[in-house]
Length: 180
Image 1 (cartoon, helix red, strand yellow):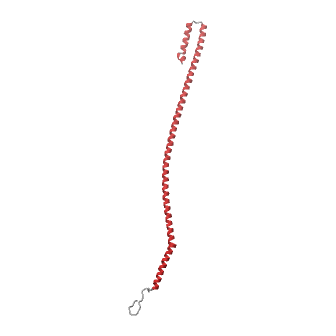
Image 2 (cartoon, helix red, strand yellow):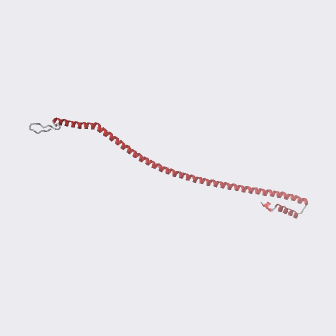
Image 3 (spheres, helix red, strand yellow):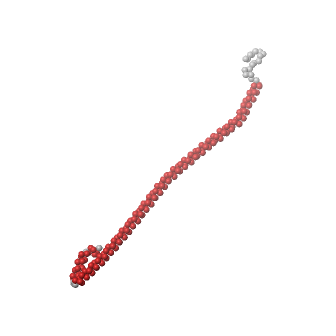
C-alpha cells in the first residue's frame, strides 16, 4: 500500500530495486549465452543433420528420376528391338519360303527331265524291240520262203507258180506284220 503522508516511504509493488535489476540483467545475459551455447552445441548439429538428410533424400529422388528415365529409354529400345525382331523373323520366313519354292520348282523340273528321259529311253527300247521283231519276222519269212522254195523245187513248179506262192504267203502274213 502506498500512503502519501508526510514522512512515510512508499512501498513498492514489485520491490524493484537495483539488485533486482542487476539479477534480471544477469539472468537475461545467462539465457542468451545459454541459448547461443545450446544453439551451437545442439541446434546447429540437428539442423546440419536435417539438411544432410534433406540433401540425401533429394539426391535419391534425383537418382530415382534418372533411373526411371533410363528404364523408360531401355523399355522403348526393347520394344523397338522386338518390332525389329518380328520384322527380321518375317523376312527370314519369307526368304525361306522363296528358297523352298525355288527348290520345289527345281525338283519338279528335274523330275520332268527324268520322266522325259525315261520316256525317251522307253521309246528307243520300243523302237529297238520293234526293229528286232521286224528282223525276226523277216527271218521267219526267209525260212518260210526257203521251205516254199524247197517245196517248189521238189514239186518242180515253174517260176510263175513260184511267184504266185510267194505272193500268197506274203498276203497271209500281211503287209501290217511286214511293215510293223
